Image (cartoon, rainbow, N blue to C red; front, side, top):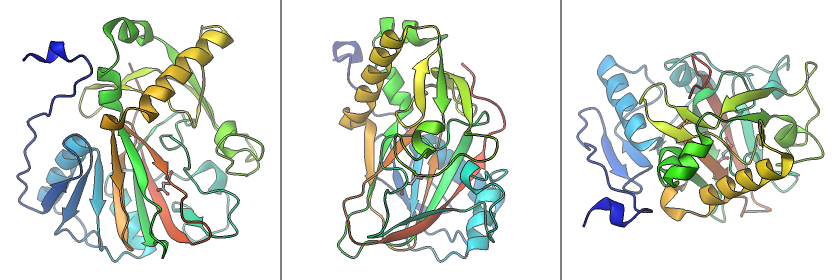
Length: 297
Ligand code: SIN
């Protein structure tokens, strides 16, 4: 039966699982893949680079178990793909690796980074193209998984009238929500000297690498849709956030073993770290690669 009989159906696309440089096992038929047989501590050959970029475009979230990485090797893997981002909260900090955002949670943590649906740092003008989170230690009780959601499919599952309504709109992405002491995901930090970053981006963005449209609002950073009344904006954003968090077919779940690195497309996906392991600890760090252009419709 034709797809139009199932308006909320996601067709499994014909993506090749043939790679010469590594073995790949998909997490779902749409998003997420585990990759074995590649040592991320060594520079990538041009063939490995080509195949990894293809895998990232196809699966959006790539999980690499059992990787031995120093901080320098973690950064070198990120730098292979572009300039590294320094998180607004770490700019000017006296630390040996400001490009690595610590992702540490233990019994004394008032919050865990990323505990809510978001894409990383969309309050910046230049988007983060990709992030590489390396978890060195996992909670001894289990748990600490991360959920990811596919923003291409989130867009494609919207009705045609809703897609037409959203095309051409822009939205504000404000760092004060997640980063300030009082609000949001409660990262509990004070504003850097120049204030929290705040930017306006299209609600529907075209991915620079694939040319596909995706939904580009997230509950972590997006505060309002420009040109709508406050009530209209709240209603539409809540509808979109609910669509993202309550449509399981958009999601995959990454289970971290110790020394796992996960590399995700930060435009095409959102994620949510699950803090279900209190009072145990989870320890790692994230490197992110800057995009080259502002998100465009
Ligand atoms: C993050 O938002 O980058 C952290 C995700 C995680 O800890 O799984």
